[in-house]
Image (cartoon, rainbow, N blue to C red; front, side, top):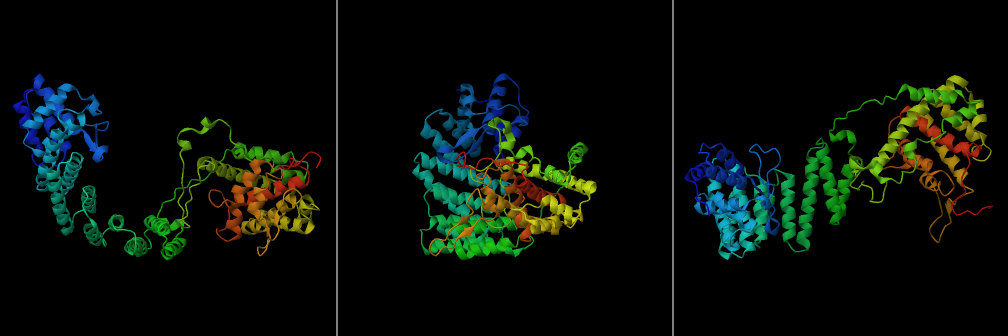
Amino acid sequence: MPQVEPAVLGALMEAAKDAVSYEAIAIVLAAADVDTNTAVQQQRDALLAALRFRLSGTGKTQDFTGVLPGDPLGACPASLSEVTADQLEIWSAYAEAVSNPFVRGRLHHLLLAAGHGRKHDRARGAASGYLEAAPLLLAAPKRVSGLGRASECLRWAGDLALRFNQKDLQERVTEDMVALVERVLADTEDEPGIVDGLLEGLRVQGEDITDFAERAARRYAGDDVHAHVGFLKLLRREVAPGSRRTDIETAIVEALLDAAEADFNAGFRRHLLLTQAATEARNWGLSELRERAEMAMQNTDPDSLGWTRLRRGLVLPRALFNGARAHIDTAAGLRDALWRTAADVHPAMREPADDERAQEGLLRIPRTRINTAGPVQVTPPVDADDNHAVALQVFAMDVLGHLTAHQLDHIHERFAPDEAELITALAHDTVLPEPRARTLAHAFGYFWLEEFDAAACIALPQAEQILRQLLRPRVPMVSAPKGQTPGTVDQLGGLIRNMRAAGFPADWSRALELLLVDPDRGMNLRNDVCHGLIDTPPKHHVALILQAALYLLSYAHGHRTLAQPAGAQEGE
């Protein structure tokens, strides 16, 4: 074993005086003015490495890791496996020589983790050091930091005493923890995190913490709702199932609701409290409280969340508009020009490539969205489309809407169609007879008058009716009544889901789903417009609604041909 250098030992003890962290001791020791001969330098470096290891976890999961990159004191072993045999011998020598229990506990603990020396001796040395260090840390000038570090030392000592069956040390740990909990609960300034850590330590030692948890819940009831709820949950875990546990669960949810309602303008914090309250009430079967939370959430809108919205207008290259305009210029007539607006859905809507590597990296990270309508989970299931891919599809449709609006305006400039000309271009004997064609013509007229509300409200039912008539001979849409259950007719969502079976391309059925009826990640225009959930829709969104009607009509007029329906036989 190496001979302890008096200069290094003195510098170490001076650095440890009144210190409340190993990092602070390391900084002072590194700057100490001592001789720089080889033995002194080796011992100081070994001690600096010991002081700068970080202890994480509890019980058998405890581990020491090196400091984070960029540490101002320079290189340090990344793990105990990198510590040399000479350094371990230096730690062992100083563990017997130092008088400061805070440092002694750390050195014995490191040696125990590294497997150097007799385990029970190392465990006892570490636990005793931590126990003796706790009152010194509580008396340190930096009161708050010392209190936090003292509670950590007691937990470390308790873990070691429990693992190595040191009964006398366990009793001392329990007594000191109880005394510290009493002290912290009696102080009006101490943080709830200290109590929480100590109660967890007592629980690990097998102590009944019910009374302390109740007192802590009352102590922090008016200060911090999250601390209050945390102690109530700790209390819930300690009591047996039954009426008392239900009372505690009710108190938890009511505390969250009361905190949310105390300040209606709390923004996103209020939303999080209501979401947590609704989730807990659902999990515990508290239906009345869940309904109260849901009703409160219904009064929450995105503008009340307190976010700052940063928006930048979409600026598309002029060449895209020129290409869209040229496509209309080559049309032979009005009807051909109308069909050309729905010539193709954006390529982003097509079936994804088989090569999964095309979207590796950050773009593949699962995404969730804030749900401002209630506590229902909005994260899609595992087998759902990738959130980012869907977001790209919606963005692609938004871009397409600007180009379509430009094309419709150019049709008006070029043909200046009156109502009769529009009816002639749109009408079809089966899917859009003349009276309905006149109604859809009015939607185009309102669009060109920039009455977008009227255009959207008129066009949406006509698009649904056109799709219904197209599907009628190809897929079932009506279910017969069964007993007391009445029959049903597919609405727009069901019709769109049947498009593939009827032979429509998958890309356009997906586009219509996102455009009209997907409430989670799509535009949901049919529901938002028809149920009055949005103000006037923007021009390019109304253009997409008109485009959808034209796309469906193009099949009726023979401009496109449907594929064989799923399950149909040749010649049917």
